[in-house]
Image (tube, rainbow, N blue to C red):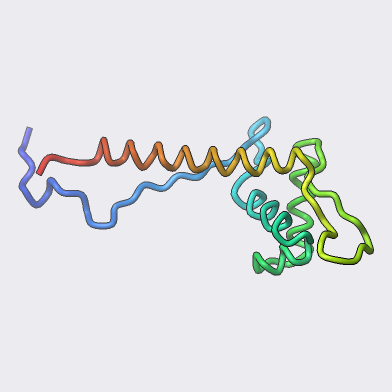
Length: 126
């Protein structure tokens, strides 16, 4: 086996691991970063319209993503008060809070694990 030269023993500058996390049912996408960010924006703004604007997406797109996730999960995620006045026209259901919070935590832990493993496995002796 050929010894690595000093130059080849170092990782390329900026080499960074990336990983995506999402949830599936029967091999079909159900929940991931996009819907998690949508739910967090609805929680912050109290409105699907304002959440869409905050995310730079159309109302139709955001509403469609919420409905698609609800159908896939078989549970409501957002409750709306049609024609309501004031700031809180939409709110997350308890299950939406649970999914969004748990997903953020899962994604964070997976990223941390990958980062730790990357450092451990790719750090080469000087």
